[in-house]
Amino acid sequence: MVEAVFGPDPGLLRLRTAGRTVLSAATTLTALLLLYGNAGTRAAAPIALGFMVSNFANMSVRDQKPWQQGLSLALLALPALGCVALSSFLSAWPWAADLGFVAVIAAATLARMLGPRGMSMGMVAFISYFIGVVTRPPLWELPQMAVAVSIAIAAAGFIRIVVLPDRPRAALRQVRVHIRRRVNRILSEVDEVLSSDATRPTPRQEEARRHRMHREIARLNDALLIAEDQIEELEETESEELTVRERFFALELAAERLMRLAARHRHAPDRAIVRAQIAELQEFLSTNRTLSMPDAAKPAGELGTALAELQRALADLARAWADMDTARAARPPGSAGSERRT
Image 1 (cartoon, helix red, strand yellow):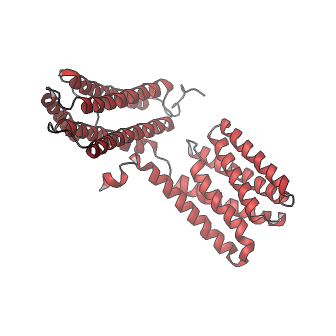
Image 2 (tube, one colour):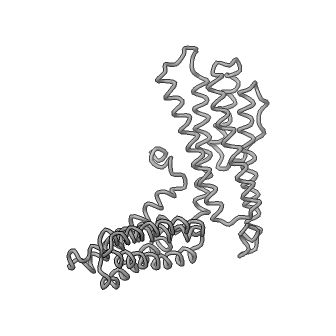
Image 3 (cartoon, rainbow, N blue to C red):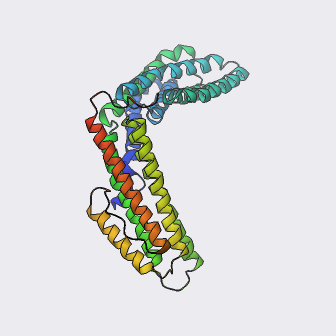
């Protein structure tokens, strides 16, 4: 059940992000309704602006450290209020409002080159101008807009930094376990292909098998990408991060090659030997909490060579992770990431 629900979300990172967005949006909307609920249609603009700023603040802020996230959230008030004021001022001239919209979109696109903070500010600027164009608030409502934006940013910051903060170290531990499970599932798919009898599968069965294999490779790739993100947030040195990335790439290539060869040589004469090696490797992956691997067995044909490459890729990844953990433990406090590129 857990695998079926959370299999596509290693480390539960998407669930955490969704929880932040829902909680901050609900908190912001509740506060604004209590504050402006009796104002009728005049409260539409501040409520809509606060609600959308709260949503986009959680989804777009990508800074690593809590104080950086807090600073980025605080800076979002500038494009939010500036763009809604601009749209309000230009609303009397539709052609000018359209030109302003184009200018805001261009500025938001260019802001992406400034990094995560620029991207988040550009997204909030776009949605704020859009809300201003739709609701057309008068300029005298700007204080209410400022209050709505302040509530939205405060709610987003509290949920993100206090209630559901980033925990890259814990997430990386979960992703490591998930990678082992994904490799185990890939081995199960390969074993199922090799255990098929001599009858040719129907087109529907062949299509279903290809879909399962592509799905397992895609989920392994997803887990590896999430692991890369968490390693980056841990601020490892550039050399350590590059080594782990290379091991990820080698593991994915080895898994994909094994699945492709299994589909091509499903009736190979050495498949019984390969299946026995797969069973041994699966037992090891199921009973060990780390990816540390024994020496690869002597290859038996092309399939056995591909399986041995996968096993070596797992062993190399385990060593890279162990070296990264050792280096992090030996690093003085406050020096993390000192060798990373700026």
